[in-house]
Image 1 (cartoon, rainbow, N blue to C red):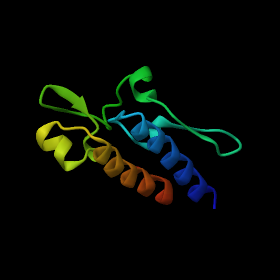
Image 2 (cartoon, rainbow, N blue to C red):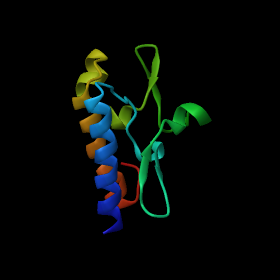
Image 3 (cartoon, rainbow, N blue to C red):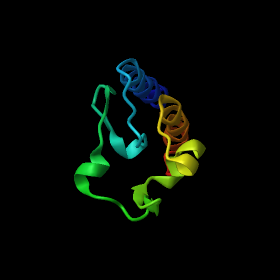
Image 4 (cartoon, rainbow, N blue to C red):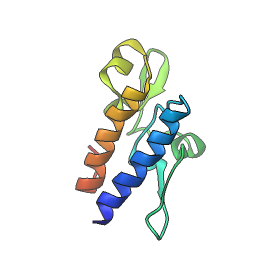
Length: 101
């Protein structure tokens, strides 16, 4: 039940971003903060702490989180709310399996 709550809370954060016409571009478990009450906050911790060599690779001259990247983002560099939804699906896999995909 806790994992489901975390996924639901994360979806609310992404819904809020989308309503503001914003795109996160790096939706992954490493960028969600979870409180003791299972409230979830979306951040960009990866940018603040530096790049983990295992999570990012160079693509088109930029470091990108390839394992979480939507196909259109990888192929055309296009980031949209739909690409965040793709990454959210990978996030659900991370949470449900307690592992990196």
